[in-house]
Length: 341
Image (tube, rainbow, N blue to C red; front, side, top):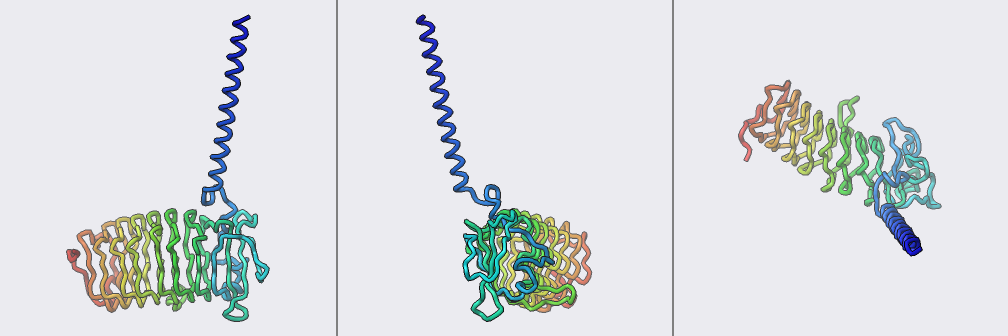
């Protein structure tokens, strides 16, 4: 009898203890889950914040030819609410659930001109394919990201600001590009059909500490035709995986100061026309360039008529590369190895 009572007491104790542990684990899990939902950022838990992608021929929402030509400013917001004064609005979320909304209001600059607003609760998350986002917005003069555009999800930024010929300054200090692999023609103002610059207005690009290009493989014609840039500091760029730098600075005709002193070019195969027609540059510091694996260096300094000095180190090798017209119409006829300090 005593043994049975003792056994029953033990069973009750075990059941109570087990239920208590289950309660604690359940409460803990709920708190943990709640905490994740509150603090997590990005596209994994909040897919409704991810904006859609566009091609260079998209003709919908604010990417119609009409709006491309008449949008003057773009502003990113931390809300998806559309105000009453909106003239037109669109669901531009990838999930098509209204999580990201875009709308236009009439601009104070004049009739028929518009201000664009793009917003999501807690800000917009970039699509993996962020190429062509503002492609051919020829009259846009400013883009304000305001910390409301999370680019850590982006992989492709090809032609992202190409042919924004009225854009004056671009502040990308909030951009996290650690996952981006393609920056082809990102700030390109060169018409390949007409083989000329389209007279951009862009004088300043601000790159922040998170603009880490470590995974980028293509910078093909990245700044080509940006003929109003005078100073360009790319000392923070990590180019160790860049393979293609074809025409990277082609037709940057007003560029005077170009800091690429930290460029790692060990994997860079195509440097054709890299500095072609940079007609105001007098000095280039290429001391960190390793060209042992380069296969095409043709026309690299073609028509750099003001070029006086090019500093290179012992890893400047051209024996494995084509060098046709490398210094044609440039200010110098060759470079001297070993001038780096």
